[in-house]
Image 1 (tube, helix red, strand yellow):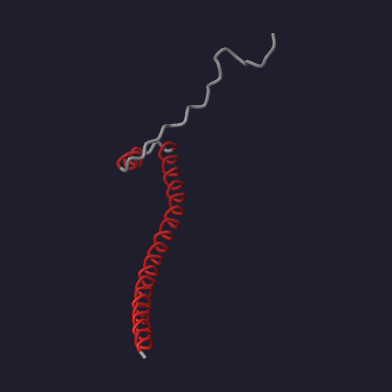
Image 2 (image 1 turned 180 degrees about the horizontal axis):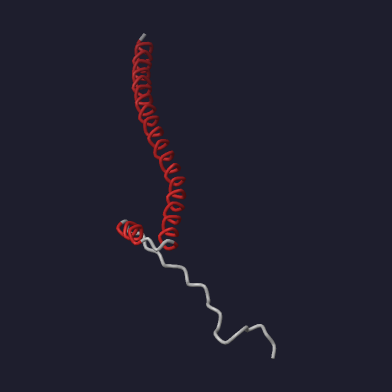
Length: 105
């Protein structure tokens, strides 16, 4: 009968350890799920930001082109206030003085 009591004691200890491990697993699972949801939200935010970055770049480029084309000092100043700098495109080459360069003599 002594071996039966010893067996029951070991079985009770094993059951208690198993219950503790099950509870720990549940807590870790919930924590992991919450972290996965946070990572998913951040990934979605980064993806949307990258899409808007391209749109933002196009808008700024168009505003800079308009500022240069129309020589709009107010728009140039507004862009400069936001740290946006740009160089004006080179002027079109002017034909050389002295007649038609393609004519033969």
